Image (tube, rainbow, N blue to C red; front, side, top):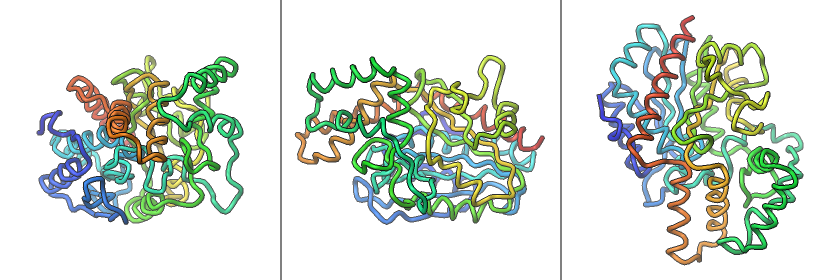
Length: 364
């Protein structure tokens, strides 16, 4: 075993080394997918993949991290702990379930402390059909000049205008407009892109290679930034399919804490476009798929939104004073990673429970 605190890392390069070392200790081969760029400190970037179990397993659980870069502090810690967890590994093996760890879906964002990819894209809004007209988000278009203003911190006038919009339309409408995904403003928040990103293409190849033959497929994708601090909301990640949602609730839900859904409004997340799980239906069409995003709370929603706004402003203004830039980067990390032992303990215990439940669900 490894201590919970030891499994987590303050920087991407350290997180990657811990993941690679954990794979070596577990006797697993690592399949690196080199990113075309370099990290913040010039380090190599990679989406690293390790399979624990039979290559031709009909039952497969995917555990993935850092879809949204900076959220990888959390997800990587869960993966590293799991690879050192003999009881967990024996549980999956005994029930004939192979586990595919996908470490750092977005290594650029993880290294640079950003939510977006090197293309400036939200990877979890990028899985749309780019051969067709892209989804419109008229509400975001009206908000964009306010969300990424010319000056930071925002002027009182900017803040008043945003508060007026929220007062008129409501906080839920604001969250939906901003976070649902937009395809018009490449310097804006939750930008879904104009084409498939490197992460999109690479993940698809991983799914084809390791999950294309699975008969039953589960996926736990680890996220942070929504909900009460330290609470892991289990958000249904799939098409609007009642049978799949019922199956997810059978695996992971309880009467007191059912799996939530963006389709019925029970989730803290708004309904989103271009979700990563779309790739499963296209690359693994023979599999019965059941998935969740395990979303851990950090700061209040508007604080998280303001951290993202500042991050996008800073990307447009690299000439910003060092103290302002450092403060923005620190706030981004706080928005997606609560650096306390208590929070890390909550993260691991809830993820571990969800992983055990997934194995039981896949065996049933």
